[in-house]
Structure formats: structure tokens, C-alpha cells
Image 1 (cartoon, rainbow, N blue to C red):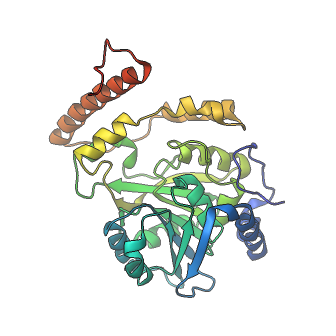
Image 2: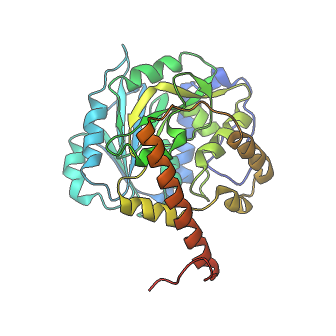
Image 3: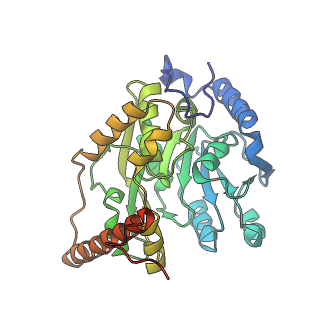
Length: 336
């Protein structure tokens, strides 16, 4: 039974999945089928260095990236590897990388070039058609993983019930902006979670295929969508928060970034109407997740003050944007 990339059908349970997911023939069949299914999204695939039978494929989705992508690759390639582990580094070019390509080629093992502006979730799905590792890491292009990231992630997957994990994120340069991302840091214990930080996650490649991939019709909440599908496809499988799998990344990089993201904010529940498969069941799953009492990192007094101030600004910006969109000028002034 093949699981093809789609969000137009409910997840199908895979019998005997702990044994099936790691089978070389099963993985090869799915990679080939996904390449055919997603061929219209692919412009080209360039293998720079051969990485036969890698343990991991580390994927960085890049769109108009700057030098921070090169730093992410340098830091990633310098990571300590568990004994016997090999890694394939795959950069996915979604447009705007031409000035960096010579430097990327010096660092990456392969480059997958996709239709420009393809969108983050379709790009992730296309990348999985070209990943060769038993395990796959999906990493932000402006995030820096800890030196022991792969060692710690591999250790969690020693439990065959763990099908995917999301790591902890700590601030990179902007401590106060990152206080707004309460989901970045769940504290010091391992807990069942959703893939709430899609740019610091790891998954068994076979589990990704069995989930039918990331939903392509919405942006925001796609990690929860995949988690719901993983539970449906792999009964008894665990998706966890791994506090020792650490990335440095900023939730917002500047005031301009803060303003832009606040103005473009959209509620994931408003997007569920376009989902053809299991929208009601997913909505119930999402509500349960939102009401779950996850552990939280204790903030310092200055972080707490920043969090209160930024939340108030965010609320005002979003209220103005919503009012402007509906033409209600009683709460928002027209732009000039």
C-alpha cells in the first residue's frame, strides 16, 4: 500500500508499522512514487557529493535566503555525529538563491530546485521525495542547531514508538521578541506534543510518507495537522517534545518582521473549511491541543515585561488589520 502526498483523504492506518517504516524496499518505493507525484514542482536535482545510505537527511528549505543560510549549514555540518551515523545535507531552493549557489555547493551534498514561490509545505513534501536517510531533520534556514543535536535526536529514536519529535528553541539574537513564542520551550522534561516547531523537527522518513505529508492548503498549524495524521496512520506512535534537541532561532528578527507577521496573522481554524479530509476531527484535535497544559519555561522579570508589552502591541496591530480588512473604520484608520 502506497501513501502518496495528499491532504484530500483521511489518514489510513498502517499495519505492523514499526517493522514496515524502516524497510529499504518500502522507502524506495515511496520515494519513487513521490517523485512522480510531485514532478511538476521540481525544476532540477543536483547531487554534489555522494552520500550512500545515509542515516539522516538534514533538509533546509530556503527562499531568498541571505548569508544566515551558510552559517546554518556550517554549524550543522560541524555537529558531532553518533558512532556509525552518516548525514546527507539537502538544500531546497524555492527561489532567490542564485547569488549564494557557489557557496551552498561548497557546503551541501545536494540541491533540489523547485518552482519559485512554491510554498513551504509543498517544498517540504518535494524534499522528502529526494531524501535518502532513515531519519529526516527539517531545519529553518536561519536557525543554528546545537553541536549535539544529531546525537540527542538519535537517542530519542532509540525508542521504536517515537515516530517524530520537535526540539526546544532558544533565542538567537532577540531575547525579548522570542518571549512571544511560548511553544518554543516546554521546559526540561520529555512530553507528548505536536510538531509545533516545524523548523526544528525530526521524523522517521517512513512516518512522513505514511502521514501523506504536510497539508498544502494552509500556512500555520501544519505541524499539528501532520501530528494528527501521524496518530491516525501509526496507531500507538509517539510524537514528543525533546528538550535536549536545541536550536537557536528568533521568533521575530526585527520590528519590521514583527509588524509584518502581526498584520498577516490568520487563525488556523478559519482555514479548516478548505480541508477536504477530516476537518472536523482535526478541529477537535487542535482544540484539545490548545487547551493542554504544557509546561512552560519560567521567564525573568525583564522578559515578562517585554512579553506583556509586545502582546499588547500585537493585539492592537491585529485588531487594526482585521478592522481594515472588513472596512470597519471605527477601530482602524484607513492607510494613506
